[in-house]
Image 1 (cartoon, rainbow, N blue to C red):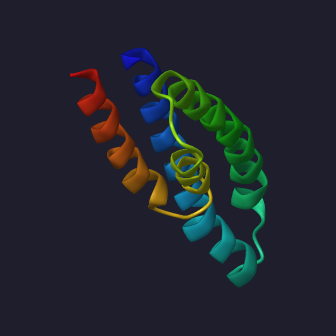
Image 2: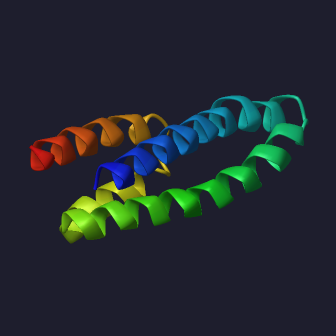
Length: 100
């Protein structure tokens, strides 16, 4: 289960950073400066990596026998800026407690 946790944590940070770049750099550039470059590049990459994040979260959830509410929390974390980091921390603490 520790390997699944590492994979989840890595993907949570990558997806979280991608979402922050998209929302706080790409979207303002698109609407304020008319430059679509960041959104055109980061948007699809974030989408693909979000799917990988979901697969890593599913693997961890299956191994940890998470409830549907716990899984919904993790899924939503990829949509809200900064939430991926908060949820990752909570998940890591919960899983580490279970591993002891």
